[in-house]
Picture 1 (tube, rainbow, N blue to C red):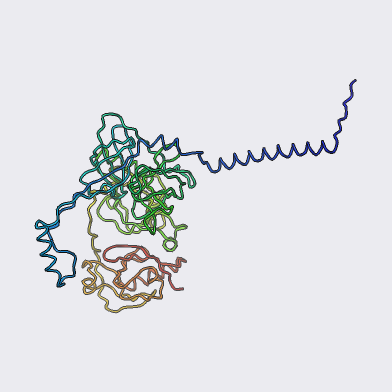
Picture 2 (picture 1 turned 45 degrees about the vertical axis):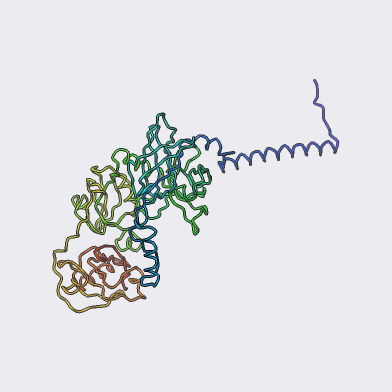
Length: 492
């Protein structure tokens, strides 16, 4: 039987072997860390392949506007200046017909979304244009006609006629974009022609000023002239339309905004089909439920949209009332007013939807058939039926000097004759009421979600809030006809 032979190494050989094992181990760790880092960054080695792939679908847009002639030959000099007559005579001799019409040009960007020539850009790029010309990456140009615009989201759809199919890019799912994902912007910054910049998604769900805003914030360089251009994900899909920048000097500082593709694509479909948008309309005025309002209403969390008024329209017909909190719309939970407005706007006109409201501490489901927002007309709010008692005295409470409405106050405040409530005569500037925006001239029409007509009504609602263990009372305040709810603390 053969016995195993013991193998021995000299100290030098042992050290050499340990060095080899250490080097191999470090190499393995280095490869592993590089792989993890690359996976975490998701950084491409180059954007060149992506840029080459999508460039033919990105276009430069030049608009021309004819500026009307001026018939006033007077130069800009102070009125009554001794030079006024001299310059008027000079201008009339040298330009007897006044200033001639002139053509003004502007530049922007866009992208092709179909092989038959539909193009998406910003509304502000083509607004007021008499002529629109599209320059393609390959160097040829085509005239474009306007299909439709949506100033609310600043989107416009154009159409060109081409003898051959055009290269186009598809919309991607903007909701799938994550903060930190790589993106690439393309366009015509400062009139320099086709240009590419890259960055990451800095944040999602940004709102600037519109009710339907859903902007992707990015640090990819966006400058003037980039407006209307696409923001691509790494699959070459458009996930945003570059629209605005935040900058103190007009140049890129790494804070750019692109309207999310999931908003844009719906608008584009409607503009292509109808030449205009057709958004759902619920027919309510709403405000966010703040923490103090939620406490005043006995809610366990601040959520939903609080109805402040219900004019004639779909909601009134369905039974929704002022003071209801909309918790769910068409099976979707409502987080706040902005979320509700967007969801309603994206819902088909004429669709019957289930709306769940919180009323008097209990949920109630109502069916509402949506109207069309664009067709909705302003409706005057009806006056309350109950007449206000004529009580001339004023009282101070919660930092407010209050007096029941009488004919004189109604006339002074421009309020219809049948309206009841308490007029705010003055507000203590050190009070909570002043901090929350109440001012002289406001009218309190409800307290604790019940109509009030006298000071004793308000005192009774305050006592009811205290008895219920609440720290605040909910007031419905109107200013120039516009309503909002305000929760004010009650004295112990």
